[in-house]
Length: 150
Image (cartoon, rainbow, N blue to C red):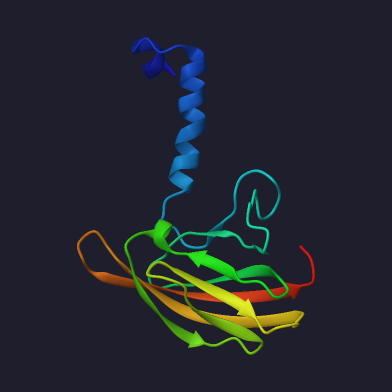
């Protein structure tokens, strides 16, 4: 606090800075695991009306498992661009009750089989390029629950 008052910042501004620093550090893209939005419950505010899933953080050479809820007969897209320089993927385990594959250069989608309601699972290895140009990867396991309505 003395640093802020010595620099002429008001107390309110100093408190705002102190509150933001831990959140910024926690949002580092190199920490393992998943992160949801901070508001709106477990999956946060999700404007997508066809599925619910947490946000991901990249972790080097690790395995991350997430749960995803998908509305019956619709697709759920996973966009990997926000995780860093995306360099492709390799599907390790294909879903048994739907399809999973690339939607474009930085996103993939899962779509359950027509009329299917129930559980599914798939795994993929996501490749990214570090700042030095070195390639790294992350294994992603997705446990899917297909439901009639969200």
